[in-house]
Length: 123
Image (spheres, rainbow, N blue to C red):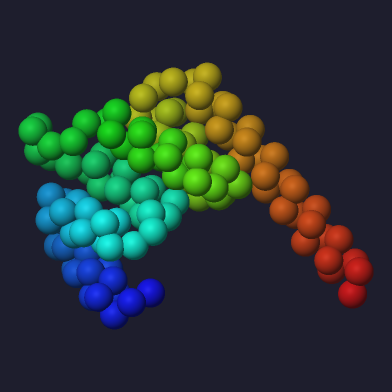
């Protein structure tokens, strides 16, 4: 990560800690524009969108799109799968999609566990 991006990430952290959600979203936009978009940044953006108090701010559909884009980038990212399941369950009240992503989470987790077990047994 470049020094410029590290500085932006640090500024984002400070804004987040100060609960300046609008400022944090703006800084995140700068960070996304300056680097490859990662599932982590997209999930963070979704979280910030959900925490906004501004009625004129971004909408839950924007948060959903961020999470779905993060999932498209890395469908095996356990954090994103967990976030999607929680988003659909707790935020949207969509039990079908919540269950879908929870099942994906469990499937990926189990595959990772099996792979770790194989490596441990091979040594």
